Length: 80
Image (cartoon, rainbow, N blue to C red):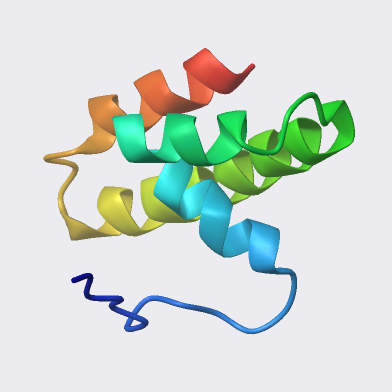
């Protein structure tokens, strides 16, 4: 049995949702991507969407006081 939570899903390119999921670094995501095989263009798109999402989070975090600021900076650095 599985539970899908669509609460954070967005409209547009489904890869944006996958990019957000990939930020967690979970084994489930790695297995999911391994099933697709070598797809360099998709991996690059995911990287771009991860960067976009993380920059948005970084801006929000800065306005909120910055408790997670360094975490988002590290995520951006990892994708660059």
